Length: 172
Image 1 (cartoon, one colour):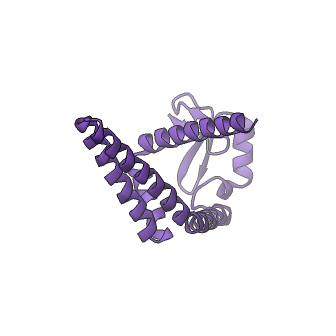
Image 2 (cartoon, helix red, strand yellow):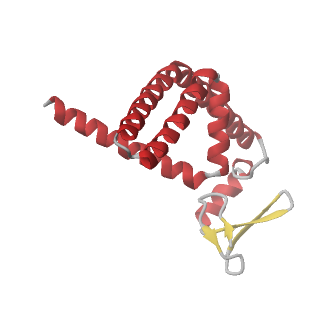
């Protein structure tokens, strides 16, 4: 299967009826309209074939750079707040661990204490790293484990929605 360079539809090369040649390569189309559009300006549809493709690539690079700059400003402004919130969660977990220990729930207390220690490490991580390093680690994680990243984002969104919903119900 091949992709029509104009509309993007998939085409069976063996049954394609609309063909054009450009730059020594044969291109296949799913309709005469797509073939006509291609023939009128092939460089527009061929990657690396002319100025339009280069302009699109440059626009993509500029958009990516702008997105990264925005992400950096958001992370820079919020990382200390995140560290404080995570630190508060850590303190609550340490208190819970002590309370469980006092009630002779030692096994559960140790599990909660380990969670508190990991939460402490996360708080320290956000406090000690600069925005570029945090963004770089997030990019690496998403590239290495996209499914887990999407699942985590969905889970975080669900939790945030529940918190916002419970907060608005409490205010009423």
